[in-house]
Length: 90
Image 1: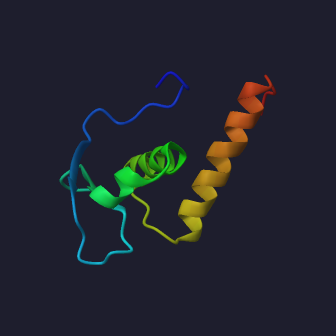
Image 2: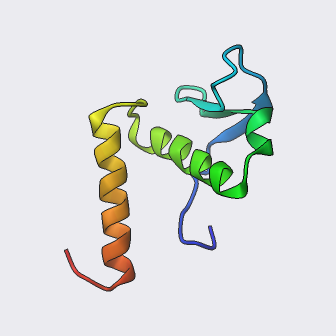
């Protein structure tokens, strides 16, 4: 939050293991729970922060992984942040 990014206050976090070892996190939109693999906690801080932002944005948008709409959402989010940081009006 000190970076200016806010997590939705209704989200919960639960830690455990996924059957698919490649899954590091996923969100249950209806229950408002982000499930985080204990393996994710061994990753560098940058990876953990990136995962938290991704799952929060899934909740904010309701969009699923690997969709063009979700990709565009992140492109727009990044572009807006760049412009705001440099005080450029859109």
